[in-house]
Image (cartoon, rainbow, N blue to C red; front, side, top):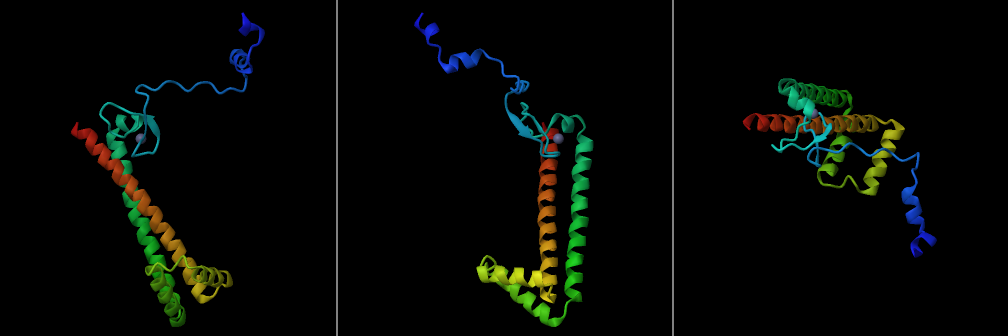
Length: 168
Ligand SMILES: [Zn+2]
C-alpha cells in the first residue's frame, strides 16, 4: 500500500506513547461542570440545575452555616475598615482634610484616572505627607470594602442556591 511506504509524521506520532502525556481526566456524569456557589469548588452539573458541589449538597446545614459565617465576618470586617478610615480622618489636620475632600470630589466626578490626579496621588503617598497618609488609609479602606462586598455577594449566592435546592 502506498500509505505504508510514505507514512506521514502525524500517522507515526499517533502510535507512540509519550511518557510526559497527562492521563485523561475522569469522565463526568453529565459532561458539564459547575462552580459551587457556596465553596467555589468545581463540581458536576446535576439534573436539578442547582449550583452546588456534592460536598455542600451532602451537608446543607453546614453549607448554610458557612454562608452565614461569611456574611457575619464580612460585616465585622467592613465595620472595622470603616472605623479605621474614620480614625485616620480624625487624626488628620484641617489642611490635609481639605485636600482629601478635593480628592474625593475629583473621584466622585470621575477624574481619578486623570494623569495629573494619579501622579499627585502617588507623589503624596511616596512623600509620606499628611495627605499621603490619608490617601494610603483610603486605599486600604476601599480595598477591604471591595473585598468584603465580593465575599458577601458570594455568600448570598450560596444561600440562594441552598434555598433553591430545598424548594425542589
Ligand atoms: Zn460546595
